[in-house]
Image (tube, rainbow, N blue to C red; front, side):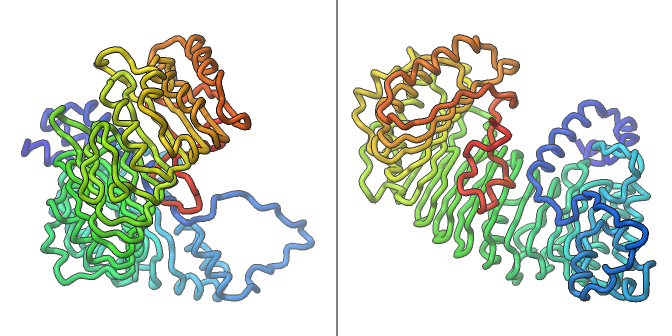
Length: 516
């Protein structure tokens, strides 16, 4: 293990006898997961503009106001921004004073392979150092996603420490720093957490310093924080959140080495998203501004692990998912059990958008769905993901079970939109849809997404007939229905960290154009 922790390049892998192919596969998975989670950088998208005829090629751009020209420079890749200095003395002065955007993938040769273990690391690393050292102005945004490991670890750490020192001096606001990705436990210099100008910070594949590094610190400008496949001690996130009075978005991806325990106390948090992680205890203790709590694809290394979700104080929570029946939900001190009739004190009255992941072949899971509904009496949109059931328990519960359970008030009078993903035509799935169609009086839209048969073998023709059959008795005559054949991978859905953190999307789980 000690030798593997020293692996930084393909040559190191061969030297220590590591399985290079397996390492690359793991790295590709981790990096693809991370890249899908990262926010986009604020640069011009490269669309070509129509050129003017030769007789009309007067330089009108240079005559624009200085603030507008700085805005143009700030939207160019760093190399293109530097080239403008050759246009005139005015552009040169603007370049020197404009906060630039540095994204290291723009420094790669066009034919460079963007692999997990790149071969041409020294040139790009040297270019990053040169740019940070020589640009006299500040940097508003720096995304370093590639080629960071380039030499012996001691030399590399000194270089990284220098970069952080320069970024702090230049007032960095938006910083993304991803290790690519061997070794997995490279320690991140504690000096990063002394940069008070940061408004957005994303870290990938690092070992974070202990909570002692945060003592005395305050991150008054930090509004968005993302931690991807990092190692950290318990309490680090809690402490960082407590020291970030403006933090609105918290994203955690791939925390799998230990069990994640969070105790969230924040006056500013609006969105918390956790995916691909081992969850033990998530407690929303006091979050008066929290609107979205999204927990996706929890990683369960053993069957004995049970995630506990405790909602103590989150009066504005509007969107909640993906809630699973196997998780222990505690609302205002009341543990939600199968068949319970929750009092108003044990309800989340503000939730309008609810997403559930259900194994319809597991009877206890289905029974908990009915109980969960009663905890969210004002939910108006319901998103269901039918999980693959490896070990069914007993006969599936059909529409008869739902009828005998009695009416569910929010389904009858509130739910106006339902999406059902990974539909395979199982009896439990059909029974649930029949119940919804027969009960929901104000239902306006139902979208059923068939599972991709390439990943989950089933008869698509039979499932299609069953989906249509489930809608034969409609309580709402104005309900629109659509059945969509999915081309997404297994358990694919439209939600992503980017969408979840974008408050212009009213419903991060809803049907989008690319799904239809």
